[in-house]
Amino acid sequence: MLGGERKALEARGRRRLRRLGVMGAAMSGALLAPGRASAGQTGLCVTALDSASGPEPAIVLLGDDERPSHPLTLDFGRCMRLVISGTGRIRGEQLPEVPLDATGASRSSTILVSPLVRVGAAFDTGLRLGDWALHAEYEHEVVRGYGSGPDWPAGRAYPGQGDTEPVLRKANLALRFDDWLGLQAGFNTSHWGLGLIENDGAHDPSPGDARFVDPRGGDRVLEARLFTGPMGDADFQGYIALQRVMQDERVLREDEAGSDDEPSVRADLGLSVGGFDLDRGELHVAVRRDEDADGARATYGIIDASLAFGIDLGEAMLLFEAEAAYQHGTTELAPTGLRVEQDLRAFAWAGRATYSANRLTVALDSLFLSGDSDAQDGTVTEFRADPNYQAGVVLFDQVLRAQSARSVATATDPGLGAPVDQAERLATEGGALDTLALYPRVGYRLTRGLDVYAGVLFAFAPVVPRDAANTKLSGGAARTALGGGSGAYWGTEYDLGVRFRALAWGSLLTLGAEMGALDPGNAMQPGPAARAAGAGDSLLVGGRAFANYDF
Image (tube, rainbow, N blue to C red):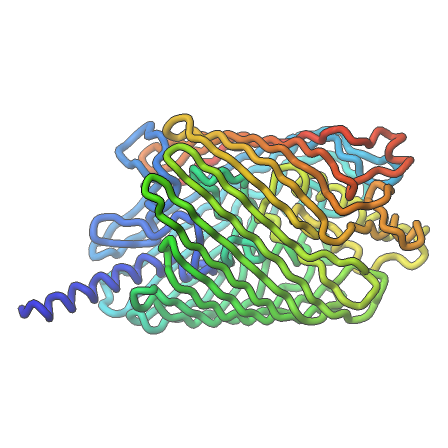
């Protein structure tokens, strides 16, 4: 064979193997998935079914694998394979004693238990079908939610509340021809960029990034998708999809019997470059319609752009990641006294800079979520982050979640006169909102598999928070959920965590604990009644411990 022809064939083979490596990821609902375990390498076959790009080496207890992998793999040759995977998790959360409203109601410190079991399988024909390839994927969340939680006052979506029914996360089939064209249909998860607006609940932190994250749930869609790529040295990929959004903790309500929101309808265009390279970019443009059980609607467009790039410093690495999102349209689904269609204009930004040198990690997260200064002016500007985009341990996921859950009841009190429409959407469900936050963190690897990390969250409120009921009772002056005069600072949270990772025949065991101490700011200031009942300026301390087993 002539040298030029041989090189051409070898180059074509490399492109096809690379295409197989990103096929599963491109079909997973996100073109890119930073930090996700995918695009591994086994022998000559590059495939997203392996986890070689997952967490850096943990301590090896059993077997020879030094990276997480899938031990239940059947290899049929020529890169055709069937992989059985799953995860079993248990988390215990310690909630602080949370003051809930202006009357002084509170919930004493309590412990919540959250189990999670997912099982799945993926099949890929590899190189068996020549230029054609077939990929099938299945994943079921068979155990989720919380065990029996505490008795809360009237409200909605308190910590420990939520649906416990099993859900189908993935059941899809994709057929493609070479790098040029493919078609996929079925149930899938959805994740964009850093997960600020679309988050699949499956992005665990890797050793060294010192993040306080323990994801649950995740966004799910039923879709038909036409896609292309990866093509060229830039690994360009693109798709267009029609979707029904089945689960989206940021928007859709699912835990109210008889009044669940209807699945949203969305058209989504996605473009990306970089694949699983350190330098990569991603763009999503979508048009979406949400609808509640009574027929009220929101129709809006979304633009979401994200990028990541790294700088090699020799003995160290500097990584920058960012995501920005904008929503523009109209809505009838905002919690307000106005029962008319309103304009929707909301913006969000998330940034992360990480410096890694040997055992040391220094990181800085930034987060901006636009707030709404006037719920009655006909324009909704509040942006809420996905609950799985976590900032800290206590402030958003525990304290503000509990207080916003209580506000659903106080905002519909008949004593207010005209109650707030769509008041159930006041509940944040753990997602951050109305925030300008800086979150410096530092981590250190004590030994292989064992990391300790700490951070301080400074959370400002770009728009002074206004509790719906208390602000109305005060004649329009901004009041907190606890009845005090509201200010522009949510508070300062001090976080500390530890994670231990061990491998047994490629399966990954993770044990960890994270705690936070929140010093509330003037955006959480108690009024006279709440202060008399014990709410004050003392630290609110909470945390969680977890055990995860992934195979």
